[in-house]
Image 1 (cartoon, rainbow, N blue to C red):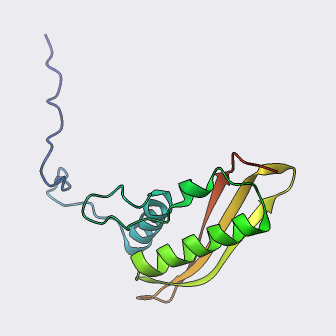
Image 2 (image 1 turned 120 degrees about the vertical axis):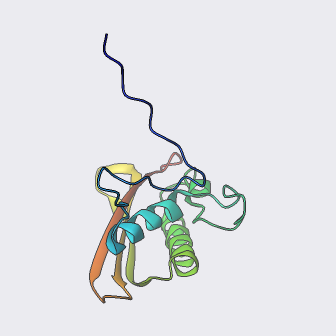
Image 3 (image 1 turned 120 degrees about the horizontal axis):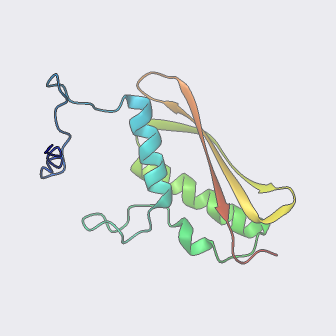
Length: 133
C-alpha cells in the first residue's frame, strides 16, 4: 500500500515555505508591483481589517451607466488609490476606454514606471458595468 504525501504545511503568518533546496521563492519587483496594483484595484475600502481606506472602491461604480461622468469617476478612483497605496511607481497615464460594440464594458489601461529601475510597464483591466446605457 502506498502512502499519499503529507499535506503542505501552513505557517503563520502565511509565509512562503522553503523549496527542496532550502530557498524561498519571492516574486521579483515587477511581479510584486503588478500583483499589488491588481489587489488595490479589486479591493473595496473597508475590506482590509487594519487599513479601512485601502483599495480603489471600483465596485461601487459598477452599477453606474457607461457615461463620461462614470468613466471620469473611475479614472479618479484609480489615480487616487495608486498614488496612495503603490508608492513604488510613477503613473504616466490612466485611460478609461469604452469597448466598441460592448456598451456594458470599460477598459482601464494604466501605464507606469518603476521608480527603482525606471522601466516602463502597463496593466489593463476590463470592467463590466451593470447600469449600461
